[in-house]
Length: 456
Image 1: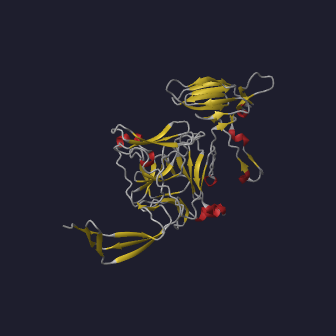
Image 2: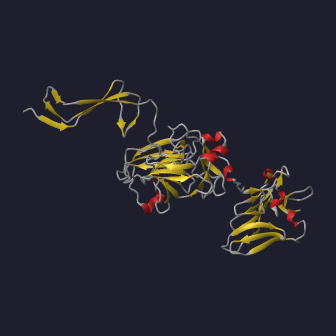
Image 3: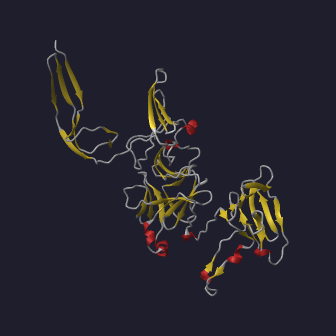
């Protein structure tokens, strides 16, 4: 007896005149022109015997769809999490290598381990893992994906998961809806989200200093500014009325800023004629637009204007359109009366005032530098003088009380604490020249070492 198998199913045939290809999740991995023939359900009869197999097929209608792909290479997976903008491990003279192991113990199963050139294990995946806790989507596709990228993550254990695919809803708050005006007053602080109208996408700053756009949990775009050790949190986004937004750290150093190409023209005309807004669309596009909905910057690389600057050195970028002056945490001297040093280029021309922007105090985290081997450091609770690499605590606030500021006044150098107490570091007589006092680390010929001095 000859067996007969009747199969009833939709038929899809992929034919390629150049080469075969594999298509998965709408990501094409080779250069080709593909004809996809889709047909309505058909009945296929297959007859099998020892000598031959024959197949007959009846198809009702056929539609030809031409799909063209390019010859670019696309990364669809990467072992490096995107919240680390630097290489992991040390390549040495051997480079990195993968070790694939099929353990004899079936309870362990197969595993893949990535080692650096010195033999240090920096990444591992095991076949017997019930859930994938490594880097599911480390590649940022920027554009929305048709597939659902939601991961089944228990919120209680978020700290053990890749931050590229998670955010804590208890920490990140939806503060701004869809758009925010770019002016001198508006600020987006760490973990304050700008959310799209469809509630699917969020733009916010992570505690690492990385600006991200989240598609639900997955990071679709980031500024690549995470964990850069020369910058300190907390972080914030500030805005220029000229259509730029700037990422700053705790001390107002700039990590990243967008670029508005229109700034090549007269800025005064721009301020009087335009208002700019930062908008997050329902398609996960973050863009800068004016009141007429013209786009000047976008995170999509398909746009004409998508440039930005990322800083690798400590730099303060002042927003002149906000009449802004930023305080530097590294200062060489402080003065009792700071306004004495401002002057007019032309005494009869009031707008010609030149401000020197001197300060009369040091705040926690700031340092009084010198050209010699010595500096004064104000920490959270201590005042430390470091001369010739020998630190000495010269004063502190009481236990569990932080320093508010170190201030130079006409009657002395004073340390103010957050509990309201004040300590004299040096007490001076108030006279007519006291307003010209300045504090600095000085060294003169004949001295054994640099000293902290108040000069007039």
